[in-house]
Image 1 (tube, rainbow, N blue to C red):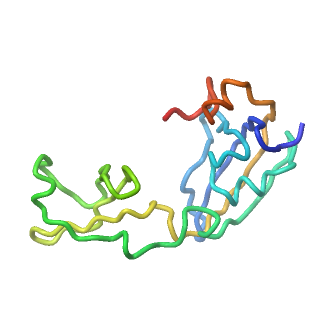
Image 2 (tube, rainbow, N blue to C red):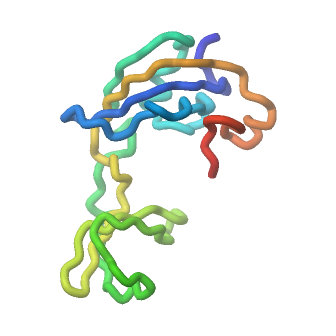
Image 3 (cartoon, rainbow, N blue to C red):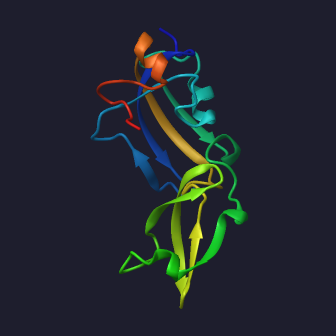
Length: 160
């Protein structure tokens, strides 16, 4: 069966950056299962997998525009430390959910100078070209229930 819209696809993958460092991998875990064509995964990977079949493997490099977007300087802001009043030990690298104009978004503290905290609302992989090695394990029809909810149910699925 070929990968097409509304098919449930199970893949094993390894994601590397430009320097060959592994950023993410399904190695040692369940394969990742998602529904093709619904934007469950980044657009560049989704389009690369279209029409492939189980048993195939692909190597693909995806530019930021088809992955997590370009790095947006406007998403990097300075906020007073007093906004983090409940947090005892504030450190760079900590992640928080902030309420923004587009709903909740994850922000990462990038630096702290005196009472000013710099937070970055970009996705950690924004601005990066992503290099995927993907093996296609399985392709099946999505159930009515899965399509209604827009994501896979059961093993390997992502829960929101």
